[in-house]
Length: 605
Image 1: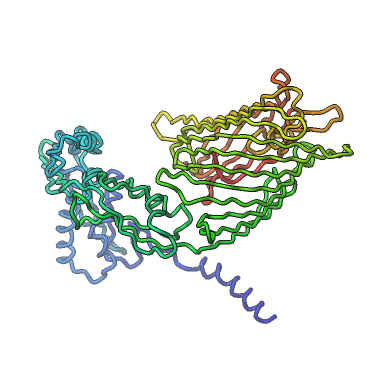
Image 2: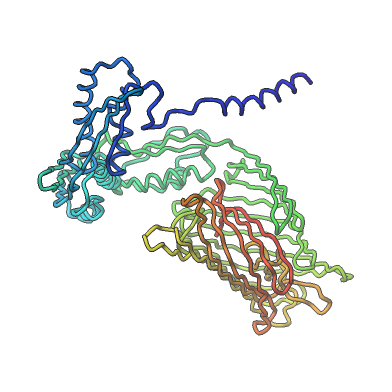
């Protein structure tokens, strides 16, 4: 008990100690007992620069300075100030140093700076030497470097801008074809009397590099073919830093490796420079336990086990158990290593019990096919067997439906950045055809398409993503079959409502309402959403929060003419959290006549 009391007293003492500690001296504030004070009279940018970097500031605390020493420091300070002001493009400033003794306090040193006219750039010359100058195939790269030069004629010259422009040009040179490129000469020819600057830079590209064979270090369990297919580096192609970075990202994202470093051996023959891969393999097996919650599904528990190389076949197996309020499932997927085009064979099975509308559905699904994933698009070809056993609260006997179908699905992502897009669009579609199984077999076709887009509005001053944006969503689906095809599995049909569908309604609450008042999945789906997202400013600065207002609408029916939209309206907030975008919405279901809170974490398309 005494230890707890002591800890409490220490905790109470900490804020008292912090509160009574003397605040640190700020830049430009004269400490007590200083030898002299410094008063700088100049425009704000010059005043800030001199306050932070003027050498004279270091000597304010030396109380034993003689008059001769102080006079010498003031002469040096004038030259130092002139040099510093020159970095901002003012090469003919008028600098007046004044030293005024004071009674009862330290002397006052006043530095008055009249900068004069800023030096403007009148000419920029960019020259190339090395392979880039002689190869006609590199003309586009030369033109891009010149077009993207960040300090063109007419701009004010500053040392920081000059240094940044040179580094940007060098990065553009070395990021493609010429990794050993360098700046062989640079000159800023300043005429301070007329305030003009002529800039000259010579970029020496060195030799053009082509990629050679892959040199791998760190492989133990996996073979070279897996690494080659994941990296997708083509020997003989010209060097591209972006391609090597993308290869490194694919290796680390694959799950097979904890880390991957991809570099080019620039000491080797440029005609076939080896690509060096330093790899560290991940553990052969991984178990992930999860706990969470959402307004759609309530509390959630999950366990996921991954085996990266199943004995005997070498495929990856991912098995997952998930328990939610209205959805319990267990499933497993076996995936082959990728081929040279990143296609993989996949076989999966899923057992699931979920509440769809007002019906309790126990379903089984078996799937087999091939899939391909890239940064911007996904494709999937598969054959699928579905069996669903539906039980309504008032039904005496369960309804069993089965189907066998062949399907093709794809998704295209064209966003500016993920997982926090501010502009761009994504489009996905699924096309399937199959037949019901059982005593009466009926053919059917299943179509589903979805689209999402962001339209950004910039402020009049050109600040990107500062004024706000429109977020738009739309989805449409149809199962085309004869009216007599009544034994379609409910997992092949559609429901709407929830966080990413129609807010203001519960998850899968929108469906076909039967005569007894129960809700079931339907053959046709249509949903849409319009949302205005506006950044929130805190103390005049953009924050990671946004405010939103939105309108959602959606309908499910067994015939297109019966689609009757349910509408939801509301307000919300978005937060760009470290683990992805967090969505918090308060929506009012116009038809349900009730408010509903929606929360969702992450961005997927």
